[in-house]
Amino acid sequence: MKNKKLLRIMGIAATLSALLISIADFLLEYSPEYGVSNQIVEPEWYAMPEWRFSTSIYLCAFLIPFYIPGFWLLYKSIRINSQRLAALLFILFSYGVIMGSPLIHSSMCMNPLIYKFGLAKNLSPAVLEEFIGSKLTSVIFPVFISHYLITWIIAPLILFIYIIRGKSVFKRWVAFVNPLVFLIIGMLGLIVLPDLFKYLTPGAINKANACLFLILTIKHWNSD
Image (tube, rainbow, N blue to C red; front, side, top):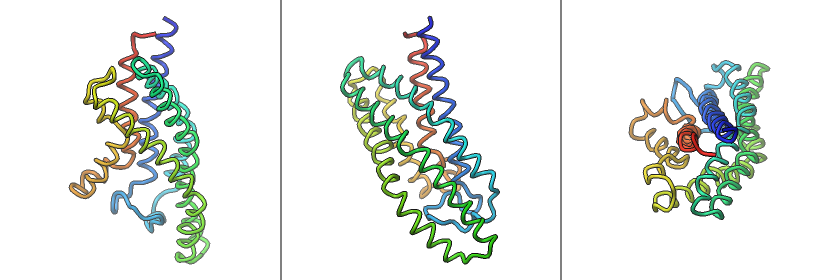
């Protein structure tokens, strides 16, 4: 019973953390003017309250460690049929999240604070855009691209292929409860139905994580 309770706590903690971090993404990314922007520097930052960005940092920094128990439940599910693949996915997801998520998320939240402070001090918008868009971005970009490739492209793609082939303990439809799939749907949705997906796309990756962790929690609810 102690093992069952521990697995339940791990699953619930991972699921709730993913939901709250999707809110952190929404606070960082969403603007009522245009929804989600692909620009590095957004002029609308000036009108956004600072609490959005500080709250977003705190949610990500304090809650991202709870993703590791969620990935452990995934490991336990996959190792039933493939222990090597289970270990590979656990390493990729865990390393990528620890290495990149808090750092990148915090850096992206600091950019609007720097922009707002600079404008308040009468610094030129062009200077601020050059500083944030060139100087700071060039420093964080290697971490950003490595984090994204490892955590949200390579690992989810391997997981998708494994489940969709019917080799796992999951039904094939679970393959689509995947961070990469949700991200693609969100990006396409901004093109097809922008008025709807401007609300849905922010935090798409972590919404997928929340759904996946919930499925894993249900699966392991009575296991030890």
